[in-house]
Length: 320
Image (cartoon, rainbow, N blue to C red; front, side, top):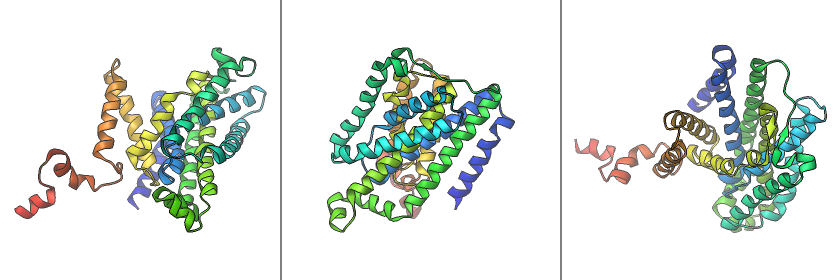
């Protein structure tokens, strides 16, 4: 109940940002919504099914190019974003039947290879994508303030859509089946769960919203290139956000994404030269200290005894 109230309050604050804050804050809020949507997307396959997918940047970049090319043909928003969503969903559904036959580190390697293959394709197909020179995207008319509101609310809409989808999956047969697959895939198959279909559905859901976000991002920045659209750093950051907040939970990916983005912004401002190294060290420490994510509150009782070798708080109270 408290999580729902906090989520609703957060949405109201984000929605009010263009009217009470400057462009920097609006930009930061847009990134908060963007990464929360990406973390929610990864949670379908990584959090519920337990498959370590590193294909996020591949779906993001494919959606970015599909949306940008459609927008440059003269189609006005949001039709290019919807087209990118369909393209990425169909691509992931077809790919899922092949790549999901692999498990563990084989699947992880196979998924990250998708990013590299798509990046090389975008780099070499210069007549369509602009190659290494990148691709300019039509700028949204109306001025920077208007564009800031449009892209903030667009990112927020995708985040809310991904969140509602997550709620539906969490309480449905699909969510139950994915949890069974995560625990023991062979046992899930033996009790009648269609393992292939369930995994493909989760993989498609994890890709679909990434494609939408990629298309909106391309319209937002008005320029994309292969190294930015298919960034390996992005495909690593998104799983870390979900693990930080709590994989397999509804609110964990949102919390993890927001904490990660705010930490990244703060550390970047204070330590310009070493921000990535410091941020990486902080995130690793947090994940090791909170193996279940920030939503697992049991760590507060276990922290003294498990990390520092001191008696737990309950034992300390009993001794008194």
